[in-house]
Image (cartoon, rainbow over all chains, first blue to last red; front, side, top):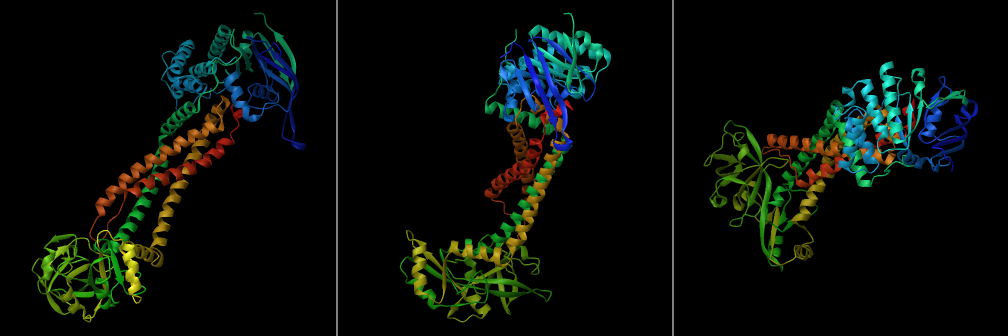
Length: 231
Length: 391
C-alpha cells in the first residue's frame, strides 16, 4: 500500500455503452497525502464530479486502480460500498442535503448512531461538533429554520461526525454568497487541519483557491495541471 | 494524526432498526398532509371492512341464534335440511325413538311455522310461530324483557317481539290479537329475536299445533339433550342409525350448516366478501401510492442516506416502521370509529357483531396490507443511486 490517503492510478469511467458511450475519465492519475487540503477545479463536464463520486465510493470506476488509505477499493463489490463510505468518507454536498424533518443535532446523531455510537455519546458528540462550527445556539433548529450558511455549517459538522479520515466536498460554496462561502471553507479548512482530515473540495469558486494546499485542474477527463500553494 | 478509519463504523441490527425507525417516524410526522391522507386511507379500509364484516356476522348470528339458544345438544330434522325453515315436518315416531336411545337425557318436539297477526287497523303482519313444550321450553323463548316463560302454559297465550309492538298495533301485556284466525293473549315480550324473515313469536306446543294446523303425529324438529358425561357425537350417531328417514346433527353441526347455506347458497359471502375486498384494495392503493410518492418527494434525502452509508436494508427498515405505524394508528382510529358506529346503529333488527378476533384480525390484516403496500416504495428506493447527491 502507498503512503497516500488517496491514490488513483489510470482511472477511467465510461457512461453508457455502444454508440452512446461517453468517456468521462480518460486515465486519471491523482494522489492526495494524509492531511492535505486539495481543490479539484475545472469546467463543467470535465469529470471532476465523476472523480469525486468514485473517491466517495458512490460510483465504481470502469478501470484503473484506487486506494483509500489502507484499502484497495478498485475491485470492491457494489454491496460493500456502503461500508467503505462509513469507514472512510465524510461528505459535504452542494445543497447541504440535510434531512428536513430532523433538527441539526438529529442530522448528526443519525450518522453517529449508524456508525455504532451509543445514544448519549452520539448526542454529546453532535453537540460538540455543532459548537465547533459555531452553531451551539441552533442545536434543535431544523434545516428550514437555518440560513444557507448555517445549513452548510451543519453539513460540515455532519461530515466530520465519527472522524472519517477523508472529507469530500462538492461545490460547498455554490449556494452561498462570497462572504459566507469563504467563511464556510475557512471553517472546513480549520477543522480539517486541527484533526488531520484529508480534504478534497470540488469547486469553481476561485475566491477560495488561496485556502488550498494544492489545486488540481481537470479538463476533458484528464488532469491538466496542478498548482501547489505555500502552506 | 487521525486514525486510518472512522472511530466506529457499524451499528448492531437493533441500533440500525431503532435509528432508521426514528428517522422514518420523523419523516412521517413532518409531512402532515401526507400522514393525514395515508391514515385516512387506512381508516377508511378499517371502517369499511369492519362495518361489512360486522353486518355480515350480525346477519349470520340472527340466523343461528335460535340453534345457539335452544339448549339442545342434538337436532333431529327433516332430511336435506339446510336451514331453519318452516313447512317440513317429521313423524313423532322419531321423538319416541330418541327418548329411549342410550345417552339421551331428554327429547322435546318443536313446531316451527309461518303465522300472521291481524292488527287493529285490519291488516296482517307475518310472524315465525314457534311451538315449544311445557315445562322445559327448549327452543325458547329467551331474551325475555317482559313476562315469564311459564305463562306460555296458560291457554292461548303467546310471547311476541318487543320491537314489533308498534307494528302489531300497540301491543301490551294482556293485549288480545288474532293469530292464524284464533284469538290469543300477549303473555310476554322478547327482544332482538328477528331472523332474516319475520320475528319469532312463541306459543305453547299444543297452542302452536292448533294455530299451525299440524297433524298430531307430526312435529317440525326434535330437540335432544344428552346425559352429562356422554359424547354428543356418539349419541348423534346412534340416533342417526335409528332414524334413516331423518337428518341428525349436533347443535354445532347445524349452526355450521346454516352458516354454509347463507354464505355460499344465498351468496351472502360473495356480496359481503366483495365489499370487504374492495375496502382492503382501497386501503392498499392509498397506502402504496402515499408511501411511494413520499419516497419520490424525498428522493434526495434517501440518496443522501445511501451516500452516507445506509444500505437498502436499512432503508427497508425505515419503510417497515412507517408502514407498521400507519397500520396500527389507522386501525386504532378506524376501530374506535366503527365501535361507536356499532353502538349507534344497534337495534333489534340489525346488530354489528365485532368479536375480538375481528379486532385483532383487522390489525393483522392492515399490517400485512401496509407492509405489502410499502414494497412499491422500497422498489423505488432500491433504484436510488447514491451518486445522485452530486448532481
